[in-house]
Image (cartoon, rainbow, N blue to C red; front, side, top):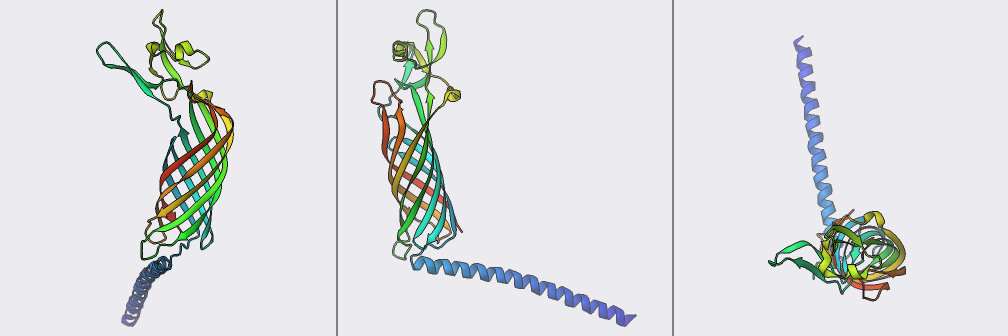
Length: 269
């Protein structure tokens, strides 16, 4: 009986020791794999390469006529070329827009600020494809990868009527009014209390199809090749199937040219 107990205890000790060895070995292997991956990333960076399978990035941009945000999916084609697929949303503004506020007899502001003569908010949603080409890798000299970007695609222009809170000059009754060839009211600051709520007019969106093209440069400061942390600058051109009315008393355009600057962040794997 004692021999059986002794053999059982020895077996348990061997099993536990073997399990611990396997756990330690597994942890050590993961640590070694991670160290090897970092070494490879460092080597690739020293060689100026950007080696990955896929990159996912988000960006926030300011343009010369508005603002936007985008998501971009990239798939490596060659060590210097990446195919890009993007989605962007934003708003375009007229460069002559002027925001006004109405004051009472005591100089206090009354109502929401409004844009004089504005008849539509111009939003857009763009789907595009393009490419990114490596110009300069993340060498030890500067640690910045410089890439050129170009592409284009479909742009959906969305016009939302701009509503004003108006007071009737005879009855004093207030109402939300959009532009409908009513210049005598829409351009009369004395009856305008301010802009209506932001959500007003979304049920009257008008869709206008268009096309766009872009070129730009991206300066990536991301750590190794895993992270994307970059600044991007470039120019856009958009053309729509009709003129896009934004502001009264100003020329309406179908073609929009603008410059932009963006911050970009994401990951590669």
